[in-house]
Length: 174
Image (spheres, rainbow, N blue to C red):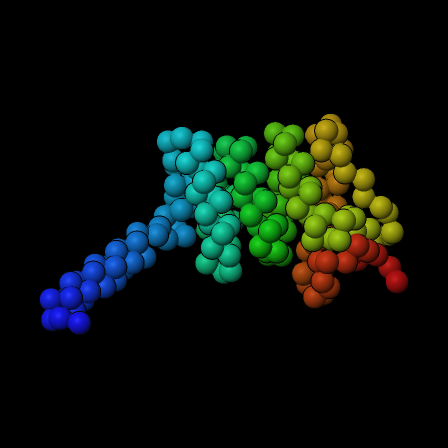
């Protein structure tokens, strides 16, 4: 090969490396994605930011997703954040997910309930007295609040005792 060819090949390789480096640098940080989810101008942009956070997977995505779930007032964004935290198996988000089971918007309550069920193998845990919890996202506020407060108490006790949240019987007597 002639020297000219090597020079052209080297320049092309350098351009490819520069493009790769530039693309790598353009990826938004998890914090920037969370900010976009919370303050984006368009709904699709907000949901896209939450989806990209979920795709990051691992610990980098969890804290920003929790922040989005905690701070967002938009039901669609909340639902996306709830789905992301469930997909990432974030057991530390269970208290927030339980709180969202009492959200004013039924679709958010339904998503939160589905996420909580995932952590409890598809069935809510029983109370200490053995009472089975019956939650319906379309129940009246009082009934939902009662179940949510009992579920919070179970979750709090499980955290203190180290019981795994992935148990369908929760803190039920043995």
